[in-house]
Amino acid sequence: MARWGIPPAPAGPRLPAAVVVVLTLTVLLAGCLSVATPRLTTTGTTPTAPQHSDIAPTDPRMMAVGGELRIAVDGPSPQWNPWHVEADTEAMEQVLGPITPKFFTYDDEGRPHANPAYLAKEPTASGDPLVVTLQLNPEAVWADGEPITWRDVAAPLRTCNGNQPEFACADTTGPATVAKVARGADDFEAVITFTGPQPAWRDVLAAPGRADLFATPEAFSLTRPDPRAQAGPFVVQAYDAGRRIVAESVNPHWWGPAPALERISFRWLDPAAQPGAFVNNEVDVFHVGLNRDGLVRAQAVPDGEVRQARGDELRTLLVNTDAGPLTDPAVRRAIATTIDREAFREAASAGLESGTVWPTVAAGNRLLGAEQAGHRDTGAELGLPDPVRAAAELDAAGYRLQGDGTRAKAGEPLTVTFTRVAGLPESTAEGLMVQAQLSQLGIAVTFVDVPAERLGPLLADGQYQLAIADRASLTEPGQLFTSGAAGNVEDVADDQLDALLAELARQTSAGGRARVANDADERLWELGVSIPLHRVPQRVAVKKRIANYGAFGQASRDWTRVGYRT
Image (cartoon, rainbow, N blue to C red; front, side, top):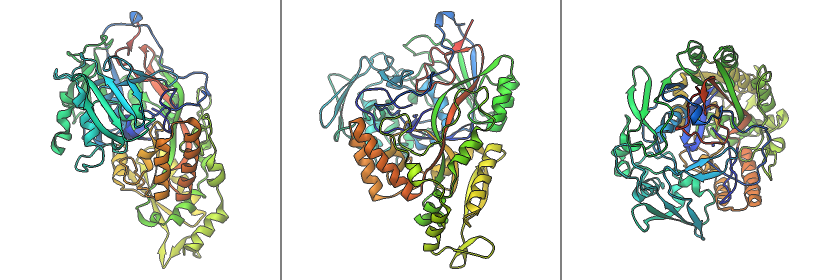
């Protein structure tokens, strides 16, 4: 998965992000919600780790032909259209990966390349306003045999630009920067004209979408797999919602290199059950993340191992600005200056350092990683624990300290709810830390326990007050924090921030992007939202014979090369 990023220069390595199209929210071990979003790139980054990926790279000639790869994922989704907001879950990102088209791939350094399966050559991009020309591969077809044409480039950009709210699109901010899409020399050339500069154009043009599915809101919603939305090396062979299993087999219409695997199956399991399934040889892969028990148990499996790479997902305390007392910015700011982020980092990394490659790293800036040029630790300036300042914020807002150590305003106790994953020790521990830290300020915290697969939808629907999740940082910040954006699960609405994010999207130089990104992050601290806790390493448990799969770092998955070593 990826990282938070700022808009990229037209060329250059990308930040150490999915769809995924907007944002990725994952729960502890793996993901609960990921808003399908394209990758972000930027210049000025310097790798801080000796290894970019850990996938056991193997020449296909040294691999067995056939076989099945069984992958554990967190929770099912009712939606199979990758452009639909309900399909933007981390689990569905994995399930849709082998069966959906993507115009660009990314190497270990995060550099983008035209995907030859779908593009005949590298796109051209020039001018102000920016004009991009895509030459589509005429051999590329959807799983029902229909060719992928310029109409499939135009349809999602025209439909998901925010002017048709009846379509529940995962992202509207990117398509909103497109002025028009036109047919080029033939049906396999698409000419996209933006409204101005667009350094993140590869994010906006990450993938085609079957034009038929954008005809009506009813056609847009796919509650079961549909070959019209599939165009990868694999297609869905079987889907059993009751047994929570998806089976994918080789696409009979596939025109690219033959896949090594014969079948991929995804099994939906509660995160707490995934280590046991791996130990019992019920699955071949599960995402370990920060799960101590999962790490230890996976490392003890004789034919298993944990592959690791640097991760830049941010463990984040989400603050719903439209819920209960959190509508008051004074309460949010008080929480932001009470939460001890270093304590969360230490708790998350305790017991994980030995034998692991990438310990978690404290984070203070949501929009720029510490390795990026121009990074400023805004959290050190605005987000350090300051109990005196926090208490003064609440006093000034009328929340008075009572004799029992809690606060109240006009007789109403200051109480917030924290939504956590039922039965998951890490989530329980995080909730108790939030409760203990806020109780020192006089804020009472109660808990709402939900199944792992429900956390993502609840966050997307705004049915929470406080929650902790992993946020992928490959997403353009405007998609996460602009007023009304689909990825804005905290319902942040601030004119000053909107203006900064709009300016950020127009910046084409690394220095300009860094300057505006730091200003925008400062504003996020002032609003008391999206409190960054620490980065999360990529840790994936796999069977040792599995080749070309594991912790990918910045690189794309090539599903045709995934398989088993001989």
